[in-house]
Image 1: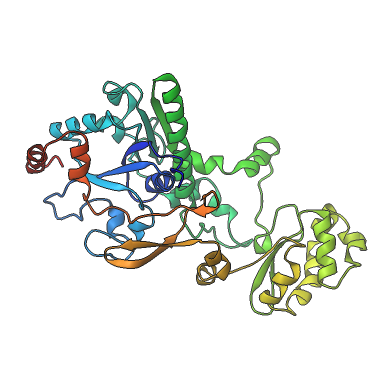
Image 2: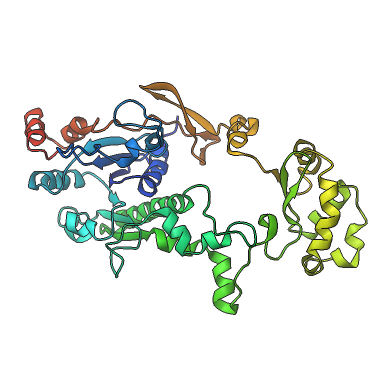
Amino acid sequence: MKPLPLAGLRILTFEQFGAGPFATMNLADLGADVIRVESPPTADGEPPGDIARHTGGYPLGENDSQYFQSFNRSKRGITLDVRKPEGRAVLHRLVRDVDAVMNNLRGDLPARLGLDYPALSQVKPSIVCVHVSGYGRDGERATWPAYDYLAQAEAGFCALTGEPGSPPARAGISVIDMLSGLTAALSVLAGVMGARATGIGRDLDVSLYDVAIQNLTYVATWYLNDGFAVPRRPRGGHPFIVPCEMFPTADGHVFVMCVKPAFWRRYCEAIGMPDLPRDPRFRGFDERLAHRDDLVAILDPVMQARTSAEWVPLLAGKVPVAPVLTLAEALDNPYLRSRGGVMNLDHPQRPDLKVVSSAIRLDGARAAGRPGPAYGGDTAAVLAEAGYTAAEIAQLRALGAV
């Protein structure tokens, strides 16, 4: 078998919850050796390690959960306290053998903990430091904690979502965390590529706020140039194209997207109304938008005469169409399973643990995966790789440095 494309890339990451772990999981899926760092146990009674190990209500034994496994497959895990001098020394020794150090800490913490390029370049000039935070590492909000929902709220995502006249609504998943994670993964690869070419590393910053704003894309461009604020459209409809929205069926909804004139003609033929495009009200995009309510009044009874399961095969391949599914229906979808969209992780507590697969196919196949690391489960092995003896590791444990 071919080696995975990121084999030979090693990343040390101080990560928690969603955005950072999602970034490195995607890199680990492609072969990177990802070593995630968590704090050693404390005496204050707080749950140890990443809070994700204790999130979601579906534990997998002690200090593990289905939530944690959703973001951390195929990584290794160590404990390390870089606030202690002995822990800082371990960090510096580990940095010599990695390409990048990543974190998704609050913006003011990386410099304080010695995780930025000015600090770590003294150990290795080619080190790449990638920082994921809520608002960046400078400015008036550097000390602010932040989460996905807040970025959705402030970047206008919530105001754009939902039916006209309804209260603002966030997306059902932490979409900004995922987008930030993918942006951070790209930053790691760009930074390492540059460092390998020049021998000089750098700091790269990704903030949830900046990622949320960037992903407004064309919506932002319309407003910034012409003051057009995209309104909500009924049924999740496109701001300019009709029909491009959800339609009620006999038992649910389907989403139909007639984004090209040919799709509009084919749609009308498929539903048994081939003359509809010749109606002056519905001939072109502008006419259909101006007479949307009239068009919907004609189309709704037709669409409600059949079930979603009847409409999808009737339109599929001719008109862009998809059924509007519940979460359960989406994950039980035979099409998803036939594409290998669900993988099994042979977890010690649950050998049949299922997670969604990587979206990237390697030569036509989904990447395999192994369960995310046990809390501190790889500390001894990683330190031994760095040259520590068993006695030295024991001493570091006694000092609370690992």
